[in-house]
Length: 301
Ligand SMILES: C[S@@+](CC[C@H](N)C(=O)[O-])C[C@H]1O[C@@H](n2cnc3c(N)ncnc32)[C@H](O)[C@@H]1O
Image (cartoon, rainbow, N blue to C red):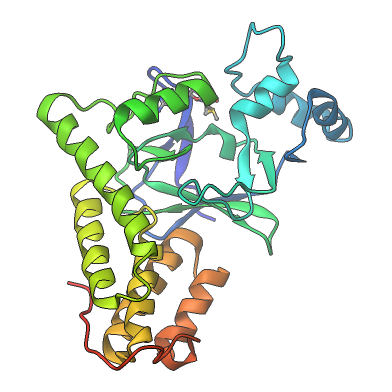
């Protein structure tokens, strides 16, 4: 892989990864196996057991990682480092409240800082047993590469207090640095998008309204600079609305968007991308095809 990042000091954030050349949307930035991996019941003792068999060099790498709990006597350094740096392995969704079954710490992957307007998506590739990081938009040389540590679709206050509580830092990302009218508009957009996600989930029997809401959510995500975030799921929702009324033409147009986005965020070999490719070729392969009376909806703008 042609390396596209370098590890640097980033003002106010400790170290971070910065683009060392221009990176295109959909490029694989890094794929890396865990240094140590833990299930949800991890403890300081289980972390020490996992560290025992790894090389001295890797142990040194582990103890050189950031520790947001330094000085807290009830959280010893091995545990503090794990809490600060672990990334989810497996499917999880902050929006749906589902947590991944495992988490792991990575020598380089754990150096990505957080942004509420991320340009990188982290995806656990179960086949490779590696974490992969994908550029969700074109990135210029010198830009910091950031993933999101959590819920982006909340007000700045809610996002910042969650990051402070869980990771011990005051987020200084571009979205959290907005002020005045910009901030008010940003909060309103994010909260409306979150509401739309919920309403779209309840629109199964009202496909035309569902597609309208998907389009509204996509417009807001674009205005908010968040098109890389969770949009594949929205495209898939619109695909399903069209499929349910046997609107093959528009179903294909939405499937194409979903496939393209899954490729960019998880790679063309991911299960989600392969599934969408199948539906793109033949929307009738979806179980809900023609569930409701035939109707013409609309495709992406
Ligand atoms: C997983 S580590 C990321 C790499 C870390 N900066 C380092 O030096 O190794 C998480 C820590 O990075 C810092 N950090 C990450 N994102 C940040 C942000 N948006 N604003 C401020 N600090 C951030 C915080 O100190 C946080 O506890």
